[in-house]
Length: 357
Image (cartoon, rainbow, N blue to C red; front, side, top):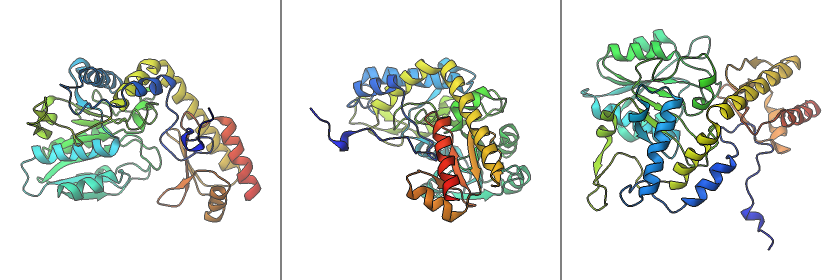
């Protein structure tokens, strides 16, 4: 029987700006087994509940949680939900009358959503010369009403890693909580010398997404917490379910995402992820050099993400011939060297760039 074109898998052949990638085959298989399972009702869906506990244990190992076997957290719909929950927990635990959250300019737009939804003030501070959170600006922005300071470990536009230990010290000086958004970077950073984990600083919450570099299916995000106090601050009663409380933001959740996260991590941690991260970084370094040789201004990639000042008319032509590329706020073309982005695909991209330039 011939399959309908509408049922074919999305092609990643020309996708260069997405932080999602092709799921690992084991993740696909696991996801299909749990398409109708709801981790939001763990007493009813016991098998997927056990898998979620395993997923959190595996993620805790990746982020160097001090007590990986007793880590708290859950599998979210993605980084946006995890970031909103981090803000919500900080607000609920804060004694401030008018709580505020301090974030760098590089923070994901999910924090804007969180501030609007939760009625907290969002204080956005500038970046330093390395496109990281400016520590002096953060120090000037926090006060006794600050509930949360946010650092990013793998920024969406430039792949930068904020100075997490220093940000954490600033946050805790004013009795604020510290959150690290490692939604994209969390599966790459373990193979670098960057400081970003629970063991590098006494951070309170962390976002890490298996459905990005972790190669799980969408949706499969992750929220990790230092202790159970965070989830307690998020819990609401659910009297009509078999489970009597729920700390998640959404009610019904994806059992497929949970199962695929476990399957992908078990297949790839750590060797497979290490090889992918190193290969992606080599590709990013190679592409950055190739673009610089062509006369474009390039932001050096500290993680496998390249930003280059390709003029807008050429950018539009690249889009017109099928390349799925996006631009940064400053206007650079942004290329994320995910596992599906091979050297051959980058060479094809450069051939089109040369032809259109």
